[in-house]
Length: 131
Image 1 (cartoon, helix red, strand yellow):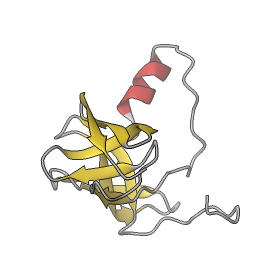
Image 2 (cartoon, helix red, strand yellow; image 1 turned 135 degrees about the vertical axis):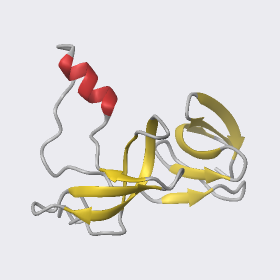
Image 3 (cartoon, rainbow, N blue to C red; image 1 turned 30 degrees about the vertical axis):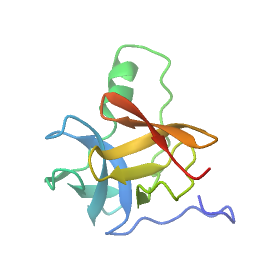
């Protein structure tokens, strides 16, 4: 959703976080093609550059098949993300997706004064930031 309450319509070139079969983890992907309903059909992994069909999050799908209490996302609810380059001079918040020159793509899991905790794949690293 945008700030004025409207749902943002996805377009080729937008980014979504989804499962990458080659990387075997969730990564940021660029939308290459949409299906007739306006949902991602083909995506390009920003990390390994593989072009593949859009896959829903495997972890949520696995939990749902195990009879867990996973909630189903309504059709068409994709969260476009902005990949930001990491800099000590920037301020980050939990949920931001960053690209670190050494560790690659990661998601900020915790932000506090002067430090952030970023999850890079299965590793978590504490980095500095201006906040």
